[in-house]
Length: 295
Image 1 (cartoon, one colour):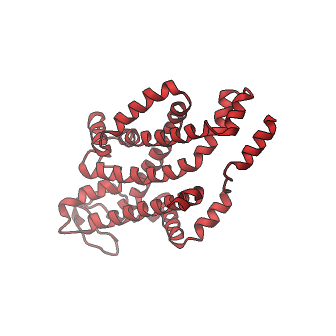
Image 2: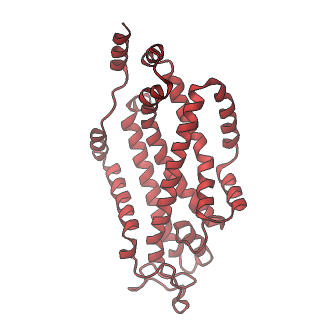
Image 3: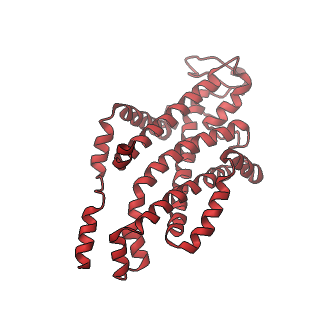
């Protein structure tokens, strides 16, 4: 009888969309295809930065400072004579690394704490009050405060981005776990005496992967924007590290003379964030068809 209940519940559970089918569905949408091409181009550009850059992004040459676009300097030079094109190319590495590390860390930390909060009622009360407290502080204010206390470094920036982001993942995972606790197949597994680790890993955590992938894509875009904002405000990465935010921060004084100092890294950042958001929206529609029907 219990076996029959398990089989019936498994059939009633939403069918999981295969990876290949999801990719095929996404690529049939031309805006998503363009976004995927842009993201792939950014990855290739970041990986091939040593070969694409026309010069050392840290090399200072006062003789050509604030130079305009030329055959030697495709995007001109900044106030220290550094090649802006090379700095933008290498800036893709920094911005993408910050975004992906922050997104992965936020998702993993949020998954761990969210599962605990969703399954254990006593822990839920304490954890969610702490999460509400963190989320009540504006994320950019909290990030600026953390970086100001810890000092400008890559680690400090990552922590400043992760701390405001992971409570949202905790709330998402907690909601999924709370819904799954009432599912017949989960109750049947509990009645059979399934060990807790096996119950979580086999029946609950896999059902959180689809929303986590979507949430992770939005965290990736948000992390890149936050890093750029912190760097633009002068409390982000050290100035010697080329990132799109640092390049714009250094060029704001000379924007009226050379708008390209802000325009070029701004365009790369905007295209990357827009592409990530388009892909994230498409992933949500593909992995959660019920939400599309509700909308």
